[in-house]
Image (cartoon, one colour):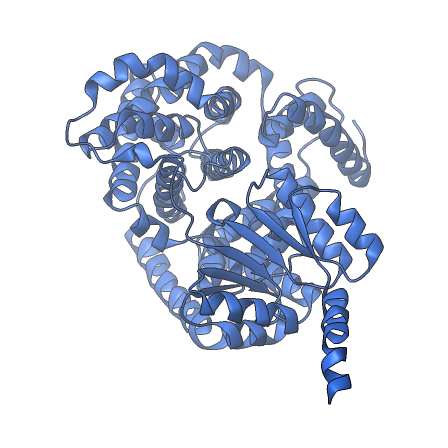
Amino acid sequence: MLESAFSQIALILLVAAVVGFLANLLRQPLIVAYIFVGILLGPAFLGLVSAGEEIELLAKFGIAILLFLVGLKLDISLIRSTGLVALTTGVAQVFITMGIGFLIVVAWGFEWIPALYVALALAFSSTIIIIKVLSDKRELDQLHGQIAVGVLIVQDILVIVAMVVIASLGSADGALEPTSLLVTLVGSVVFLGVVALLARYAIPRLLSVLVRSQELTLLFGVGWAMSLAGASQILGLSMEIGAFVAGVALASTPYRESLSARMVSLRDIMILFFFIELGTSLSFEDAGSQILFALILSVFVLVLKPLIVMVIMGALGYRSQVSFKAGFALAQISEFSLILIALGYSLGQVDSEILSLVTLVAIITITISTYFILYSDRLYAVAAPILRRFDRVDSHDEDREGSQAHPFDAIVIGVGRLGSSVVRGMQEKGGRLLVVDQDPRALQAVRGEGVETLFGDISDPDFAASLPLNEADAVICTAHDRSTNLVLLETLNRFKFDGRICLTAMDEPTAKMLAENKNVTVIKPLKMAANRIVDALPEMRER
């Protein structure tokens, strides 16, 4: 085993990069690669890395950032936009899956507390994986994608409630201590009240100043998340709760997309250590003895869990194609399932056997469900003759799947002199616009009827990737900076954007480079201005 913590971390990052590359070739999410790296380097195999204090601290940091970003993305309006189906399906699926899972685990011979933990773990689905794979397939804006994301939001709320309950119980026997619980509840109410006041009156003003510096914005986001996570832990809650609340507090600000884009890379690096720690904690002996039961539970998650979703959505009047795709998108257990089990393990409520069992189920279901989502159209084509027999005559018109109208005529990047002229011109023609800029004052100036605004730096590839490209007919970039236009073009090509693209070039070499892409219309402000001057010269002579 490497004795230096620095050497262990360096080795982890190197091996994770190699294994992650192989996972990417197999179209697998990096979560599976990270767990595999932990198993490979941990005591079960090579014994080069142990879950020491340094890795444990980095793991906690990663979990806090993950939950902060989940809270930051918590968009209740998305639940409203998908109607009753997201709330009903989300709540019903969680409780039905929990109930059946609990009976299966108890019947296998487990005590009720470990069985409840495993049942909880089976009920939730992976936000990171579903959004990533659906985004790559450009299906987030399709109906089944919207419903799946709405269900995930409901699940995220329920998993936070579960964490609060677990943190409140806090003893190995699960005995409820009324005094301790009362103190925790009172402290929680005060904590939430203070955060709500700060979020309402102080944070927006502070952010309006900080956003002028990318470094300060990122530093504030990390500091805010860690501070509330620490305060939550002091109050007797888990630090996960505080990190989640920190994200929710900023979710209503216009800067959340920009902040999220800047922190997502940090999350991807730091959450690596949680899964590494999980992999190094996996006992191969436990895993070997649990493999049969892990396979049984995996079949339950991969087959019965989607069927539960399909039955619920079918009862609500949704056709088989939508319910099939939404159901099989949810056919895995969540990263939060592993966090829940790890929390129970740290409290002494579950042992390493349960930790190994749930980790095995996570590896199996995440690996297989990724292919379910990628090849959902082919799978549905096979199952359609049977499933369509169960469609109700009065089913919702879900055949709009994949052909929904685009809500934006154009996404306009930059509202300087050129950009503001473009916005005004398109407004006069009744265009529906999403305007993006990193200057809050510029956005305030163009905000009006038919114009939505989004704060962010388009030169950040993560932010550029977060744009609602599937909802726009055109993308127009009026920013003069060459690198900004190139980053945007790379993002549009990566996501195979098939709408109209207009990019700005301030010199001929840049214009030629952009024009190599046949889908790009190049805007040349200097040449346009020069042409106007030349065209105006005859009139000047006449005067």
